[in-house]
Image 1 (cartoon, rainbow, N blue to C red):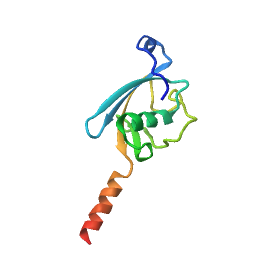
Image 2: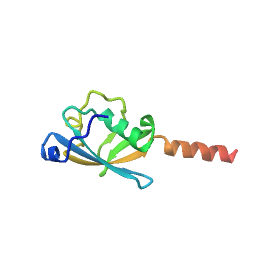
Image 3: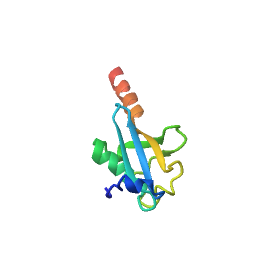
Image 4: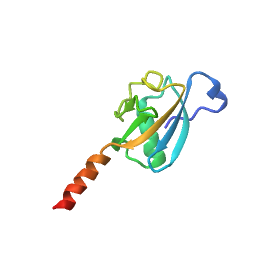
Length: 110
């Protein structure tokens, strides 16, 4: 992960603050340089900080209007990503949770 900008530099418009909320109640907040940080870094952060495989999660804005599924997007920066502003809250959801639950129900019926 890139070095986190200081609180003093957070007053600078180049800093994007991301707050995360996980389904189990955990939460996190971190600052990034929006012009140089790619969307994939958010997935790396969740993987490293919360031990959730980046390939298995989706990041969704709090209002549900935008979602980020491409953990390998190293091109789009936070400043360019639609739905991410200077301060943004994201929900961390597991990608195939519903499908896995449905598959388990099918296996239990046999």
